[in-house]
Length: 60
Image: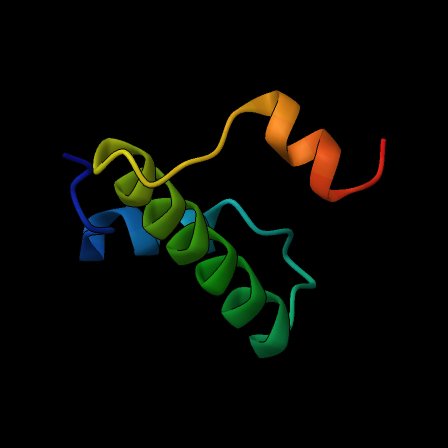
């Protein structure tokens, strides 16, 4: 199972932003990382779909 984002990982992600980053940039980055963690947890629980199913849903 995927571990949730820790405080240390959040601080690291913010430190990786450019010097001119805004608060909105930091929030956007943290939300992005949180959504990745949610997706990985869903995959760990077997809640994902196959590549073929994704293509079918997108009409590809």
